[in-house]
Image 1: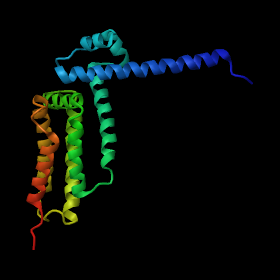
Image 2: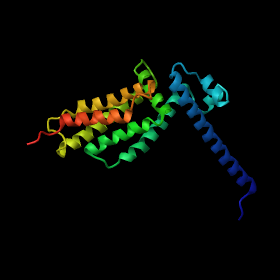
Image 3: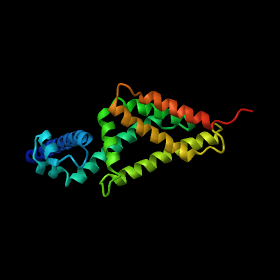
Image 4: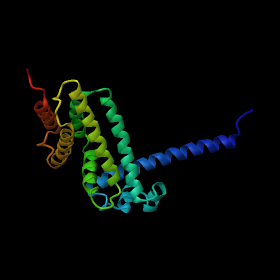
Length: 213
């Protein structure tokens, strides 16, 4: 028995509409990312995002129920990109993983928009009731855990001293990388994030290296 032409047309129309919706949502997220990066979450308005996209503010609320939900969805997309990026270091242990962080710094220097978005929102997130505060708190906890685990692996296989303070070292590495992003955004031509990240990690590792017999 053949497919009803009306049913087939309805299915095609539904597929086309879903594609349009996905494209529109992606467009809104891209514009919101740029706007939040340059103006911050609180200073940016749905109206200016909508104007840039070419729709009304109500049109944005058709896809995202609120400005907070728009930010949450934007951070979710950032998570997906980070998960994909983390896959590049899959299987690396100990100091190999730490040196992989240098590659991360190099990639961040090629994507100023994302780096600026992260820097602006992370600073804003410390304010009371910021909608991204929980996301950034969990993110930093996860980053510290990942770097601490790599340092623990390095210690366990003899690359670091048994008494190495891996928790403080992990915090220091993350602090340097985030601080470098601010300096780089303000003066990209004079700050080399990749080189300074490498130098910092090498210096910390050297300070914690086992003493030679």
